[in-house]
Image 1: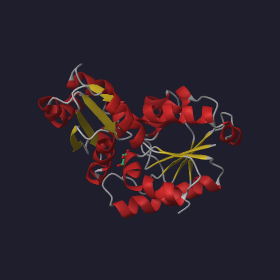
Image 2 (image 1 turned 135 degrees about the horizontal axis):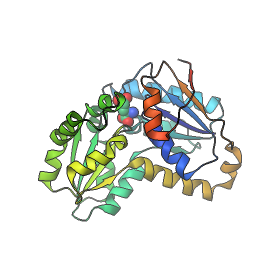
Image 3 (image 1 turned 120 degrees about the horizontal axis):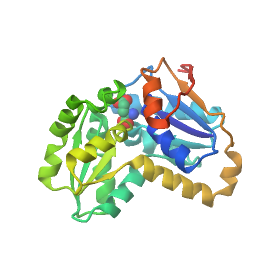
Image 4 (image 1 turned 90 degrees about the vertical axis):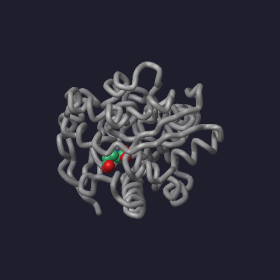
Length: 263
Ligand code: DGL
């Protein structure tokens, strides 16, 4: 199985890309709805639970771990890779960084994410490691998550909030904007409309899944260990809010949640 985890329901935007590119692989998903949001928590908290969840997914038979949560990717991916050396672990930042550097022409990149992701500085660090001449502008957009969870996608107020947050990226002349949060791809269409056609959008979930696909192609031994089938399991540590709406946005179908808090 491919183990995917997030703080809650937002990771379904990553499942969407996995289903599109890697149909047939069985998924075990864990959304930590009992403890969300991660985006406003401290690094130690996010690290602690990311570690527990990864351990739990491995115990339940996951052979590959996908850190769908951007805040976990930012605070915890390095320690998870150390702790579980030898286990293939995919996180959002490295694939997104490569994509953004490939796309930008004027070397001005915008990053939007949760307060935790932005505070971590993880994107800046990795981007500058790959391309030291970049100008990077990052901004947290904490209202986007509740707007998406409320299902307020096509409302005028959502457009206004997006405009308010993203205006500065237009003024600064960035040509690439990274959606560094699970929920933001659900707003991609209106974000695109708001920032205009000159700014290209990077959805790291797509970049991650491309890398995962390539990895599986080159590692038949792992492929043989990852179970196939449609018997996906979606665990949540507490009742997920508006799951039906979010799974409809992402997967165009309902999913059956299994409520279980192993911690
Ligand atoms: N999943 C989180 C992320 O991608 C957003 C929601 C939260 O703050 O828990 O950073």
